[in-house]
Image (cartoon, rainbow, N blue to C red):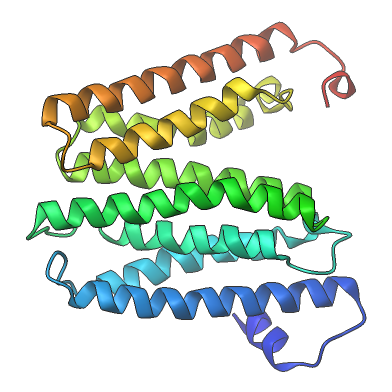
Length: 261
């Protein structure tokens, strides 16, 4: 936090790394302020009258922002944080606001459900914006790609937890949010799982399908049985996708790393 304060108060530097940190600090501080205002408004609303909503939302966002800050070096040689990453940061704030509702008592399920659907839909739609913006502005980087991917993973995790919290699906739906992190953990135990995978439209399509099915599951218009079936469909597609990746990695585990990098 002292680093963040320093970057906000000190003059701009010609050093690209310092300029990047300064731009990131401004973006994080600005989005955090907007998130605080939005979560205060939500805390005072009827569907979720909770004193814990604001600190929970800021804690989720702050923790994620700290990880973003720690990975900034991968954005080199870019000297600007960039509009695309700012959009992803806004998505992160929306997800943090959604996450703050997990575990809270819901007095008006219909209103809460529609609010969750609206926030999640905006977060999902912005996912189609940040990539093209990065390419159009020549701001694409390994950092931006990883930031976008991890934001998607967090959105899936939060939506699956909300689906369970609101009794729209059983506890099994949490597997959708846990699968990505289980895959990463498995890569630590078995290095061949941690190898880079080739680009795949199937993987991207399944990610979109998973998010869409979870948003649909939260929709109050969907009957409970259909909500369960919809969430199960998304989880089944995600499971098959991860299994296909595991099979590919197993088949190529003895290949030289540079072959598929």
